[in-house]
Amino acid sequence: MNDNEFRIRVKLNMVSFFIATAGTLCFPQVLNLKENALGFTNSIFSVFVWLLCLYAVNWSLRTIDLHDRRGWTIAAVFSFLFTVAMLFGVRLEAEGNVDFKDIRLWISLPVLTCLFTILIRKFWNFLDGMEIRKKAIAEHVRIPASPAKTARYANILTFFFMILCWIPVFLAVYPGFFVYDAQDEWVQVAARSFNTHHPLVHVLLLGGIVCAVHKYTDSYNLGIACYMIVQMVIVSGSFTYLLSFMRRKQVAKGIRLFSLLYYAFFPVIVMFTLCSAKDTIFTAALLLLLLSLLDMGSDAGTFFASGKKQFFFAACAVAMMLFRRNGVYAFAVMIPILLYCHRTHIKRLCLLCAAIFLTYFLINGGLAAALHAAHGENQEILTVPIQQLARTYKFNRDTFTQEDIDMLHEVLPEEALVLYNPKLSDPVKVQFRNEAFVADRSKYMGLWLRIGLKKPLSYLNAWLVNSYGFWYPDTVIDVYSGNTVFTFTYEDSSYFGYEVEAPGFRDSKIPWLDEAYRKLALEISQEKIPIWSMLYSPGGIFWGIAFVYAYVLYRRKYHLMIPYLMVLLVWLTVLLGPTYLPRYVLIFWFGMPLFAAMLAEEI
Image 1 (tube, rainbow, N blue to C red):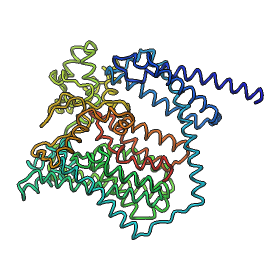
Image 2 (image 1 turned 135 degrees about the vertical axis):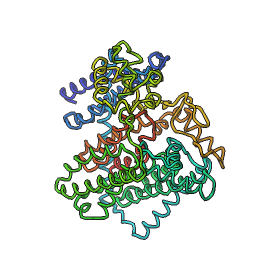
Image 3 (image 1 turned 90 degrees about the vertical axis):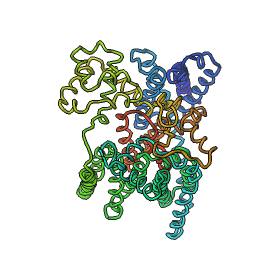
Image 4 (image 1 turned 180 degrees about the horizontal axis):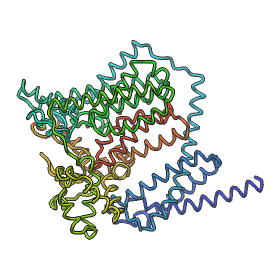
């Protein structure tokens, strides 16, 4: 070792020591220690953390290309956003707000960003090495394509295997999870009185099947069960198509087998496959749309020359938008991005997108007109402003003048405002007076803006605490805590709506399995298992997907970025929603095998 190498080694050791020490000191700022603040600081565990950080940072700095500006920049941006999420999230989970005057927050932010940036760059180096080895093997091993007949048999077996694996759970929770507005949708069909609060396509599908089967069998449970069977077929079909897509792309058999078993047995997949919420079919359509976007990105020429591929893309986009309104917003923002990325096919793509929106508006508008569906509710799109005004009114009432209070009570009565729940907008939102708001929108939006300018941090906290479960990995989802529904009262967990709303009722054929799913849905059980708990965490999976997206960007795999952008846009829409629940980001779980294949660069 010459003198120059020795000096570099000494500098790297000093930098490693400083970053590891500072990172260990700041580490408690991203731990939800609650009252036991000494659990980390006054513990030998902190010494092990410091030694691990010191070794990891030193090893990383010695082996990473320090002159790769692009890689360091992408890793730094990702690490900064992740650190912000952790620092804000731990405070929101523990205290219900972020104290922006806390100096520890601002000291920890650059320190932990630096630490995470180094570790992420090292992990990307590791993935790069795996890719090089994989390419070397691929040069000597050619995987033959499966014959069409063999592929067809594989698809049939895959389709029925998943359904057979779901049937025991279906019998255990019979007739299925008839929950999340299911009763309201059924009532619309039964009473022939419709409104546009819920997607009319789903209202007719769900309510129509339940009412039709009841008419001929006099059993609502059987009607609910028939709807669940229809949904099982739809979901199994979408998963089968994904696995077939992965086989055509010659994804490794191990990844495909893992994906099949994951879809067949993972509880989140099974619960929502057997759940009446519109989110399930919406997410199945979104998953197929992601595959179509991958097709478009990998070979645009072939895609735009194929009528079948274009029709499939359009059908998936229309179905996604028909089953959830936020799909419309996400896809609308996606269109300029698609037009830019496929400029050589801009005319064809413009016609295709125009046809998609025309079809959507014809179907949705036609159903609304034919059913004489009532319109006029504004609560859903005003969820965040309603929560912001309610929070400021509760904690900073002196911000409002008497004139402001009188104006606020015109749209939000006092009895609604006192029910403010930081994590759930429903108690306040349900009493919002639409007629008054519609009569003079500018007046009330002016009130919202005027109060916001006085208390911007109150507004920011209102939005953060109402949505942080979507981006903070350690969130315990308890938004309905204390709420009594048909057969139980939510306590420490609101992970999933384990319920059969009227007119149905639970008639379990396998009680012990039913009890296992009840615990998953309503008790903090999976959260107690390290690492495994992250597979159930919307925030945890979000950052896993974000990590893959950053790596794809780093590797310049731009054709893979479009599907991720679609997922990101859907995620952004739910940040403006009424609360944080897994069902709103179900694509995280439905798309996990696809994201894993992308990370492994198998697609």
